[in-house]
Image (cartoon, rainbow, N blue to C red):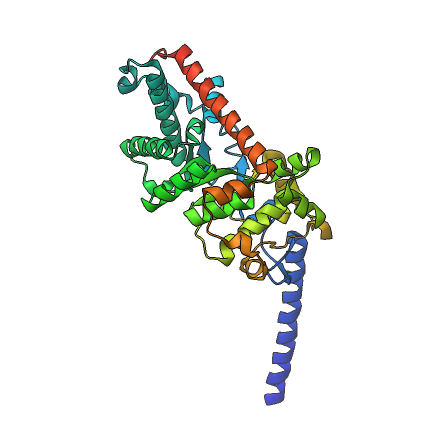
Length: 384
């Protein structure tokens, strides 16, 4: 009787083992995606596309205006800017147009006699109205652009942020849902430090050098944004930037190298900042940045990731490039570990960061002026 029971048990175990093998084979055929853990060990997960796989390492944010692409690639966070306002005004049927028209009908702004103040008031209201609408559509934070004409005025930046925050309070958008996007001049970094000390979250942009990023991290900026592709573009047509030349001599892409260095600096020394990689041009860029907190990816890259369900070749293996392990192993020089101030920042910024920062500011200033010029033409709006 005991032998008979053991025989049945053995056959049953063989059957279960065979069943598990068949199930495993079916799953592996369905998934087709191999990823790697921090330690390089291959594992299979339930992702059905490359987009699902990379999203397990970094938060992928679509690089798009907010019109027809919301349903295809629902964003987790959003930015409201002068560029976005110009886009909204060029598309009268967009759901955000009413937010702009309501801003232009604001009696408080309309009553201002000074033209410049009135237009600035309209722009503030429009940014906040659109930002309020966006806060209802995305689960994450909404970053609001601060007028780039204040880039070298610390107290001017702080006053502007307080003005915008007051408007957000009026429409019941909580502070924790908001970021304020500030250029990474020394004055902008100082404004970030003071605002963060008040509990106001800041987003420092136009970071093109390690010195800017380290100063921003020391200031306690909530988000630090690096434009990976723009540094690469600059390096193809210029030379004599020590930071870029050092990366090229190591055989590294200068934009990816900076993002890697900054990520490791933040995590090795315990700063609270989150790193955002922007100007990502292709899938290889994105795969090289896996582990960065936020990656802003263009729609063509997202579409390619979404459509890809086959196992990537070795060149595009899903490996977490940036992690607490990479941070611990990364070495920094004594010169890089100083307490950054205005003089040391100015001395350390090379031609690339100086020129790209200036170009970014010029673009933002131009867009802000265009918004005000457009509002002057269409104010007051019809039917409001």
